[in-house]
Length: 155
Ligand code: HEC
Image 1 (cartoon, helix red, strand yellow):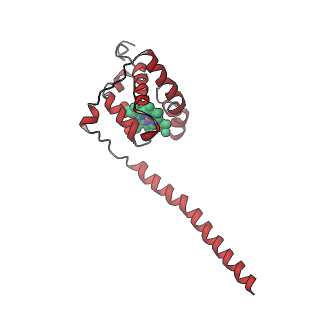
Image 2: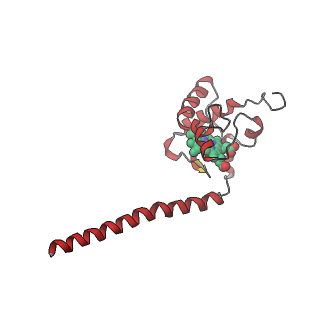
Image 3: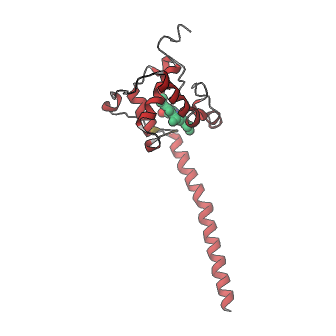
């Protein structure tokens, strides 16, 4: 009698648990869909836009940036930085093309720094994952993909 009751409560508990476990991902999925529809507008404070890059774009810095890029950014931004990374293609993400001087010139280093830190839309913010110095190396690397002399007209 006692055992029966315990078994019943156990079954009830399991049913409750699976309802929660099945319901939870579904709810998260819905939230994701809602986010996909309307990305938050990107608002970068003026003082962030004006932030100066303290790390000079030496070959060493660009190399350090590439090493970070290869392991943390390439699967979305692509090996050449053209935005055709495997992950981005699979998820059909709208990516910037870093190989185009045209697409880079609208952003200051400070803006890149802000976006890498905070993220935007499908771009994951790195916050504390990267030290400021590492972010500047990454930016120096990204800039090296489309040097000013390689403008689309001259290509
Ligand atoms: C999950 C895929 C993904 C990963 C990983 C990723 N990014 Fe991005 N990134 C994006 C998307 C998508 C955008 C465009 C976001 C938007 O529309 O505002 C973007 C935008 C950017 C921009 C802004 C470009 C512009 O002109 O507005 C920079 C800079 C950038 N990413 C750098 C990086 C760096 C550096 C890393 C690695 C530390 C990285 N990203 C990792 C997806 C990714």
